[in-house]
Image (cartoon, rainbow, N blue to C red; front, side, top):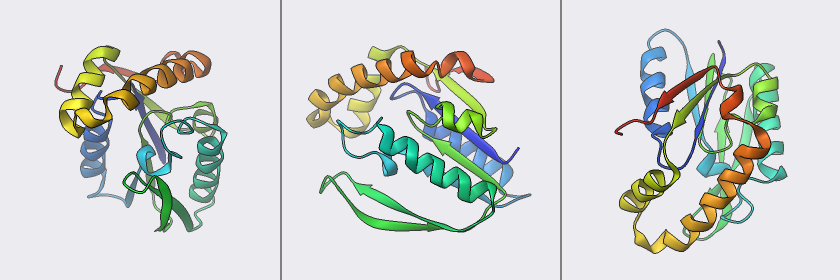
Length: 166
């Protein structure tokens, strides 16, 4: 296993699972976690072809054991304004909404899906990140549901589990 994707609705605990897996495997191999939040192109273009192309580049570099530089989105300035260098690693964990999409599955990723009711997940995000993003999260709910319906992420996951903390 060299590639893991952790997907599910907003607020499901994907970052927590990614950190738990990173800690579990870090004693025996090199591990890198990439958060989809760093790759999204803002709220409206987050689950777009641009994300898919970024994932293709990242996975290609990982599988060929090549270093890669990825552009990082800044949620305060709402633009890509920094670069993260990623060296080859034994295990790459992708986490976030869209992490388990078809291009990732086709590359041989083991996909984890965390189940959570959409309303519960959004409430958890607002509690964590603040009510100031409530309008964005309402639109996000629609974007993620459309993405999951089209991509069939949950239906194609190897591991389905209840969200953390629910």
